Image 1 (tube, rainbow, N blue to C red):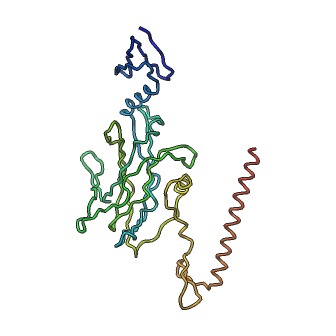
Image 2 (cartoon, rainbow, N blue to C red):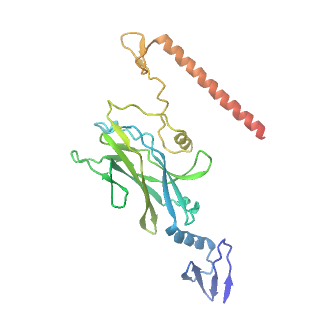
Image 3 (cartoon, one colour):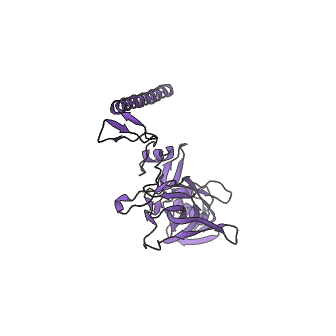
Length: 294
């Protein structure tokens, strides 16, 4: 009987007997006739066994805020803004980051709509009622893509992370709600529930009472640069122009202030010049940094 030590960080004894091998992996024995068993298979087996003792945590990086209610037609359906972004963090028994599990593409999150009202249960935790159907119109309350797969993206600090993005969710009814994010993993043909988290309450407004969208966050812009489909919103403080049919005056959305057409054209040109100067400054600073590094 001959003991063979493979090139692996963990010592796993391989016992060679004629044409069979006995592999001991954490008190489990497996026999195989393949004499070319690689350590990659052993490491994958270790990951499967260790995944049962891992701690899964969902961190909401982007909370849903003001939402526009779905209109009478499908064209009037507006997605939740900002797009909810959830980050997955996995830890081992010692509460240390377990990075190997984050490269698994079998994780996915299902979003469901909850009532804002909550009540304490016997364990001292809050219970939320899941909203699935409208009692009056018999339509689903939460429309769009309710399942999100995992993306490996760079965070703002440059580190890689696992993120789930819901960029196509809409709500069919006005009111105050929450979103529940449930994490699942596909493993050996089975769907295993891992953990869940609940968002902060958000309000769904009608078309008339909708206050407007906020500017997209730096995180959403950074993910969009990496190829993620996120609808970015510009700064809402920039006034929208409404031209009058009966005069040369222009109405702005900042308190109903009225400007002449010439004044508005001058302001637009001035803002364009300021933007060009800012871009020039950014490019100059980059060139200076590159020359210093070289």
